Length: 221
Image 1 (cartoon, rainbow, N blue to C red):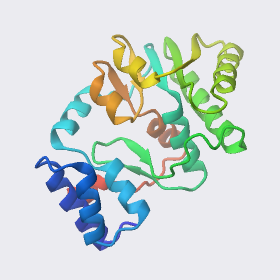
Image 2: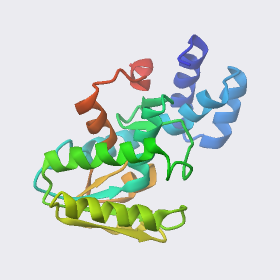
Image 3: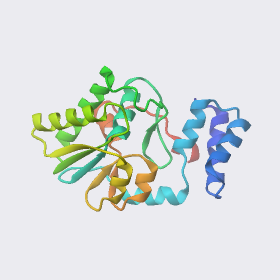
Image 4: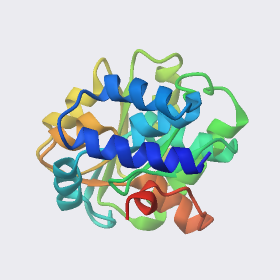
């Protein structure tokens, strides 16, 4: 995956994106130039951002959720964890946030691996002791109501203060928040919010497994 040609592609892409070339166009141009496969193109698309975006996100980032109001971009977090447990590609983008190239979206709701991801998420949140946790769930995804209900039940069983609700547009809800910390690696939310952001999947995986993940920052260093 991290081949010599891919490393050249990452450097070229970072240069062009910083000079305001359109993202979709240069993914195709560079992908064709270096004969990148589908996964490598996904890594470019999800993993390389402009320098000004990196600076803004670094300023907003926090790794502590203790004694704060935590808002969780639920599917964003759970799909990254699920992809890792499935052995699919999970990597660190040049903004330092963990992302995946699995593209599973709403296909895992009743799979054992998805429930394992929920358990790891809740266990980490519980031991980190936020003041309150709110799970925002995308209503358009299949079985979202079941997921919200399960999360509410888990919160009650673990005596954790919070809630889980479905929303037509959870991204917009998260961007409008003015208080607390948002757990997400969604670029639109990260750039649009005035709240602090945390990389909850990375914190969970690092705490439990200390994995060695492909890191696109190393290519650009």
